[in-house]
Image (cartoon, rainbow over all chains, first blue to last red; front, side):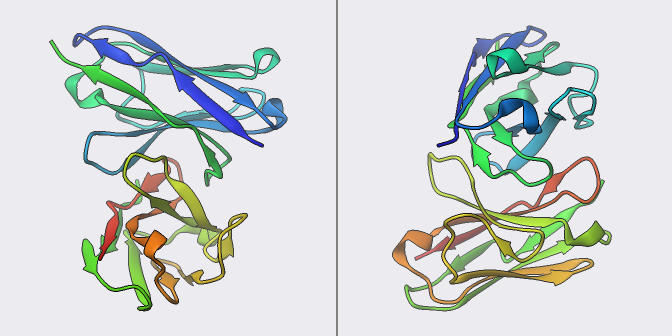
Amino acid sequence: EVELVESGGGLVQPGGSLRLYCGASGFTFSSYTMNWVRQAPGKGLEWVSLANGGSTTIYYAGSVKGRFTISRDNAKNSLYLQMNSLRDEDTAVYYCAKGWGHFDNWGQGTLVTVSS
Amino acid sequence: EIVLTQSPGTLSLSPGERVTLSCRASQSVSSSYLAWYQQKPGQAPRLLIYGESSRATGIPDRFSGSGSGTDFTLTISRLEPEDFAVYYCQQYGASPWTFGQGTKVEI
């Protein structure tokens, strides 16, 4: 059974940094593209970033490009999101999700709150 | 970026009814790379339909997707109590992948 578990969220001041983690199990992690998708409180879904299995293809949404960095460690079945220069509008639940294009498995999410 | 507009914003229905949700794209979605998700309060989204009309694993056949180009539809043939939720469409034909704003199906 596929399982994705996020952690690393919390309260951070504007301009601060945070690193999110997603641990994966139940599938061959290195063979799949992984994504971060976020959802602001009471709002819709926003795709944030993806990394393919070998990290040779990496994309970002325009709203986070230059501030966020996605990475993965296939030996540890882990996905990361380094978030720098955080803004109020980055407040959201961050989900990791498996798949290229469409997302067939999701974690339960980790809440990031950016506030002074 | 491709903007997806879903309509209506909210639907008030009863169990047993047939539902049609609309998703319109600001430009043609390449090769019908269009997906639909269901999200219930406090839960992660769940993939229902991908590639415009293929059902994800475990999704009952009362859910169906159709459309092409810029106009797509999710149909629920007969609403079950567990189907009351928010539904999102998503395109993955061109980066950045984008979602519609969602349609809430309520009792």
